[in-house]
Length: 307
Ligand code: CP
Ligand code: NVA
Image (cartoon, rainbow, N blue to C red; front, side, top):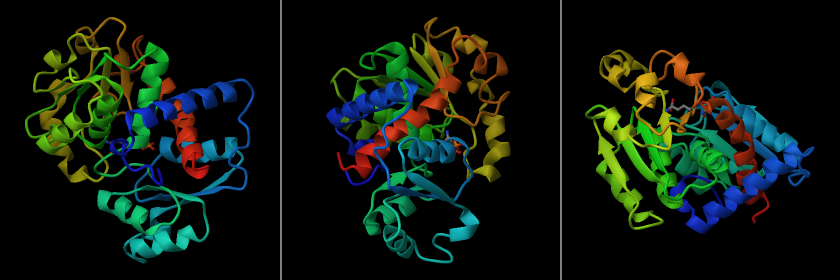
């Protein structure tokens, strides 16, 4: 594994080993701190879009492991504008041990990986958010004790987060259901790729328009913003279509009583999720956010130590 670009690239065994490593690193950190496994290693963090969790959790993961990380702002690098993406990749490869990037166009992360000689980590693109989904699988496994056989229902836009969750679910034995307005669900291509990633033949992928049907009996209820970064001009149109997909108390009551309510954050409270649910008894939003730190330590250790 040179890069961490998509959960599609990891075998079920590799994903499982990475989850075990995240568990170990979290326990170690809780017991007083991590070993400086990444002493002397450096991470460049290139951002074309804003971030709180991704930026801070990757940076702190490097710090806890004895390494060093630094932030490169969109206006500083102007990737693809001031300088071509292949040149950015080649230059940074001479200075640092790994690159994490958040880009608008997924093709840009693929180009970075192609031309960099050091590992490249996808910190979100318009297509996917695998670091988020990996941390989400870690959270579900930690809180439910397993992944296989559970049902994850995603309600809202069939976006980058939904796509990575679908792939991660298939690799780890979860059933996946999604409810979206017409025209906003995952594509046939996504579903067909996901079908090839199944751990077990009986794993279900179900696409609905009715959120109540999608959520019925779910172990995990997941949502994300209705308008992602880069789609701002569609906000008004989306606000017309998405209100029936709000995760509110009534919708949560259709899932299992002990279902985990998850959201990658940032949340637009009052739109895709109500305060009552975000702060309610089923919500795991903040342990979920914290787990980005622990999960990404595992990704960094695996890539940087070439495990
Ligand atoms: N969930 C997530 O990636 O958050 P940020 O956009 O704040 O990094
Ligand atoms: N789907 C959202 C996720 C943010 C972490 C976006 O791309 O803006």
